[in-house]
Image (cartoon, rainbow, N blue to C red; front, side, top):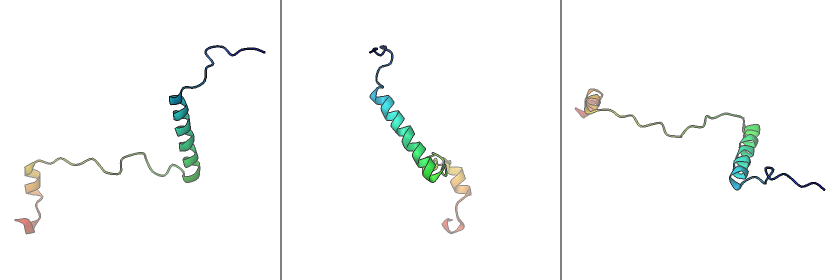
Length: 62
């Protein structure tokens, strides 16, 4: 019987977790397809200065 070389060691827990996550994503893609992009649900907030708010103020707020 031959022994395994030292570089053929068992995968690390991090590698196992990454492989499981990749397999989970593949299964989801097979069932549901790649419908939605992987982006946050909320868009980035817009930053405006006071002048923008004054110019875009609704008439009933004057």
